[in-house]
Length: 486
Image (tube, rainbow, N blue to C red; front, side, top):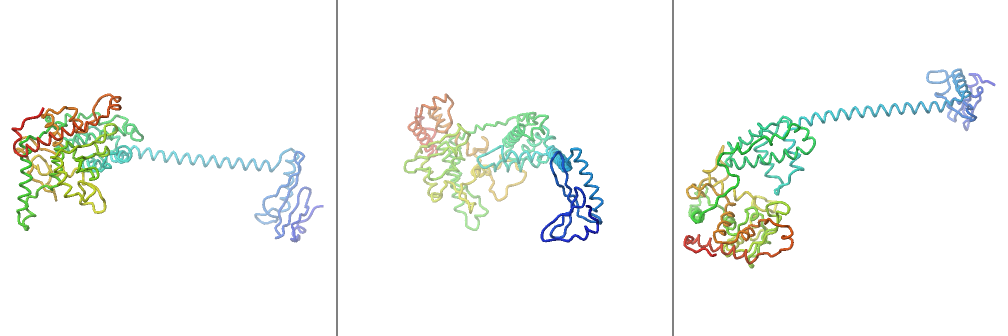
């Protein structure tokens, strides 16, 4: 029995869905809401299958008419008689289309990544010296001050000259220009030029071993082509050998005293224009360096908890010692009466602070003074040895600390360490004891260092005491006549 269109149109919904057989293998399902959908039943390979046709029943656009439904049902059943399941074919087609969509998405993603890689490569090729510095300062170098001085130096002396140059275009001529500019324009001259170049070379060597910098230095490291010694003045010596004579030490003592006395006697209304003396803490730091052979940085970082004024000892933890790894070791200084006298005076000034030399301009941070503060104060008062493009602002700069009329050159706080060590040598103190007083890591077998643990307290104490006696005699004016003890 075949239903007509009129009969199909007249079909009304019931309490539950029902089916009307329209033709062989073709049914119309009427849902509770009145929706009418075509169902095709067929047998393929001995299995009964059912398929819902796309679209609802009807003769308007988007719907399937009776004639079309019959035709489609006949085609499905015809395929089934040939062993082809229309649903399997449809599933295979859907799988094929899904695979094509996946492949298209993957191809689009590959294209996107390739574009990003091309952009990254283009950006990498354009990376500058400043970009390399930013990566190096973050991951490649760790100075004790948190790289603050290194950042300051590059910002002042390197980036203005070569910071914007693409790394692949950096040449040895660019590096020579940086060195020459430092020599010509800075009062520290050759020494600072050498130090700046060493930092640049260290940065470039770091970049040579890592991507993307290695690819940008494919033509070699330009720093390897710069012969720095040919750019420095012919008389430049990287290692200072300045030793102050007894006469210069007495002169320095006199200068300190006269500056303090002169300033104290200056009327209150004229003090602003008067020549100010060094801070007393700075003077004490210089004499302590002389009497203990310590480094100025080790002293400025020290805390009062490490100083025992009763026992006359000063402990310097290896964290404050210059060097790296096995080249750093704790140090115990046994204070001579000469050194202890200055420590006690310093304690009367800063003893309420955690630090021997507390920073006065750090309102919210409890820390020590800048490690360069004493050196700057001393250097600023030897103006004749500096070459400056413009005068310093808000810093006293004159020639009040020039010694011996300047004929022996300038002096630095670190020269006090060398001067004290030389005096020990003149007093006949063994060199290995002098090295221990300076906290040098002595060369030799690691086995020997592992098993031999004598602390040389007696020998070092004697050496520091003999140095203190010598200095007291110098400051008393009798250094030329006291005998040197064997």
